Length: 221
Length: 221
Image (cartoon, rainbow over all chains, first blue to last red; front, side, top):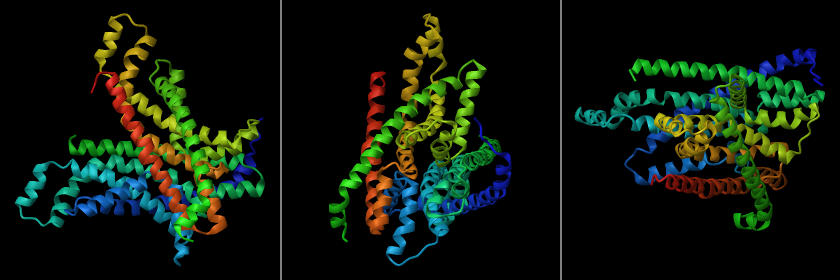
């Protein structure tokens, strides 16, 4: 019943390992965009301008309630209609980075709101400018409580990279599809992809939990 | 082609796609809730075998990507003689995936019921099954409904992936229309708006209503 071929598995393994590299690069690059952009989206919601806050808030809600795969298509296909050509990698990184930026902005928001009121008042009492206040007082205290959520989304972004295969980014699922249709064998490539995902995301989740515990102890929580 | 002309021509296809999306959502939600309840209770069981099964299930489905699970169910299971029709494979994969996340919510909800309630149920001589059904689960349900609201949005977004195995949902119709007309901004924009409306004006209000309704039933208003 199990028609598993080990020699075929070994033969395709190098290609899958190479694709794993691409998957990790995509997840890493997307995450860097999300971390930076997410902070900007969170801070944009704290300006005195009500219109800006409202717009950003609605934008974040919109991105968070629509499917990532649709956003990937949108970025990839709508650009050329207006004369902007983006490579699959480029559009993929924009879409996935923006999607997770919206999730991370909520995490940052929670972190910023958890900074005690006295800290804000103290910063004002010291005559700090708004930029100084955020950079030197608020953000350093807002990040540690947000770290757990940030870690979870790092694993989340990794598990969402297969969606990039639809526009031709050569990550794991894209490679497995290619191997499958070249050889008419889907059992080994898809199963190996599943195992590779487990082998990366389970230890990663464990490390994040340990790190979270370490930060909590460090902060005396 | 302007947006109005575009919608006038293609709304029947977008609507039928949205209908399939809603059907996939409802079926996957029913399956997901059932699996969550089973796996959540099994993870809290005294029996090591039941607990081990639940932990394995949860880790496998949370540790790999939904795309991988979908492809595995659709392309690999037939090799074991278990051919599943694409529509069924779609909601099976999405429901099983959400079930693993939901199981953790069920477990957390049950653990959040105060110890006194367990002891009181024991004191009035209830059997474990009675205690769970009549005392613990109703209170656990109220406690876990808010995170279930987020999970339902994730589920709705997850159904967009069934288009990858050619289920004719909204995402699939949008891709088909895009491929034949190249009106990417119109078609993907319209699809984004439809997903947003489903999430923001149907799923979220329903979950909010359910939260209030259940809280009232327990006399917590």
